[in-house]
Length: 68
Ligand SMILES: [Cu+2]
Image (cartoon, rainbow, N blue to C red; front, side, top):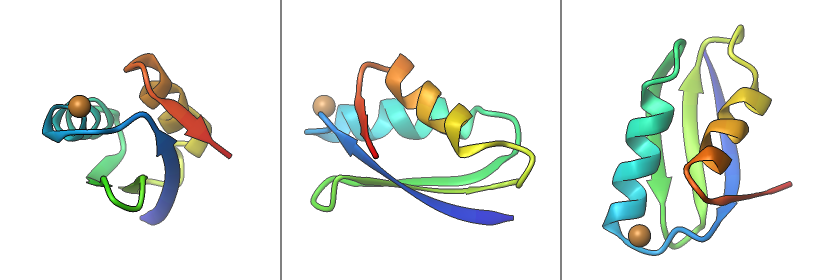
């Protein structure tokens, strides 16, 4: 497992937390996902075979902006 911290803009409330946690958590290879609204980050524990790019893509699919 690796832990990736992704900076995400546009998250503002518990709905955003739920949407992202659910979408990222559903990705194959993800064991944990946690949103920090104040820090504007998404922490993901995942299998190394799942690339960070794929996780970022999923977050953007949900309508949020990934900051690199
Ligand atoms: Cu929200």
